[in-house]
Every structure is written in C-alpha cells, then in structure tokens.
Length: 232
Image (tube, rainbow, N blue to C red):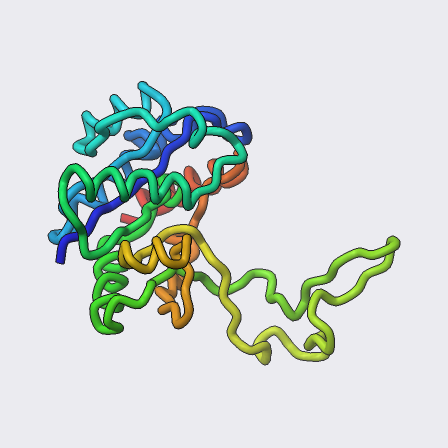
C-alpha cells in the first residue's frame, strides 16, 4: 500500500500565534507529526501544505516534502479544509503518481502513538478502504448538554438521560482531530474524509487525543509531556 501523509500547517493561527513552529518540549509542534509519520513503513511522502516559508523550512529540515507554498486563496481564515486537501492530493498524484490512501495528520495532535496509527491503517485494510476517523469518549456526554433559548435552558437532545448516572450513560464519542484516513476516490467523491460506514479509531488515552487549539490546550500539552517524562 502506498500512503501519502498530508500535514496542513497554515501560518495564521490567532489563538496560539505561530503554534506550528513553537517549541513543545525540544522540537517544534509540527515536527511531532512529521516524526511519527516517518515510522509508518508504507508512507511514500510526508507532504506539508503551508503558506509560510519558516514552517516550510522547519518541515524540510525534519524530513517532510514541501514542494511549494500554498496559494493565498487557500490560506485565509475562511478557506475550506477540503479545498486544501484536494489541492495537495491532486498536485501530488499529477506529479508523483497515484496513492492508495491519504492520511491527514493535523499538527495540533502531537501525542499520537505509532501503535495507534498502525492500528488505524490495519482497520482501513480490513474494512476494504472504508474511511477511518479517530474519536475519543465524549466529555461531557451529549445527553447532558443544553442550549440556551430566550435565557432558558433546553436539552440539546430531547428526552435526554438526565435521570441516568454517569456510569449508566450509553457510550458516546467525539472527533479528536488526530487521524483521518481514506482513499483518494472517497475524498474526491464525498468532498470530505467523512463517508457512510466510517470506521472508528478509538483513542481512550486522553493525552493521545490532546488537540492544541488554545493557550490552555498548549499548557495542557506541556503538562502532559512533563508528566510523561517524570513517569519514566
């Protein structure tokens, strides 16, 4: 199997400025994803799509493939993620040949294990190319979520289970952004990694599922990294 890893890394992060090249531990955030992708034997290239020369240079030094800077129209706050994905996929297959699968690794998820990634790829193979998406147990549970209308609370889900104890709630999962894997054909047809019959890659480990979107998330990532180091 020939797998293309795609790491999208736009420069314009507002909540955590320059986060993709900010040091987490001893290396820039984006390098965590590049390094873990290197451990997947079937990867043909680790393609970084960025609009920033500094991110590009850091990625190249780490061993990623960065053939160009992303066009300005795909680098705005409103640019659709799928447009970025298809732009990179179409260019790669035109210039370097077709691939069997495309694995999206967002740089904001630094703590995935190689064992989890390899298991996700095996799920893809066993299920004949169905999309595999990583999820984590939902916290809070959706049956205990509310919306506010006219300053009053209403359950997001009618007939919700407020009478249930937490241990009696049915399992529920949320996207964690760590792993998206599908075929080029499915991505082009659905204009998404999401499709009917998606296969879950469940990440029970809360640290593995950390997704850095805010300064609080960054502090949480540093805490988790320090804890891992102290536990050794």
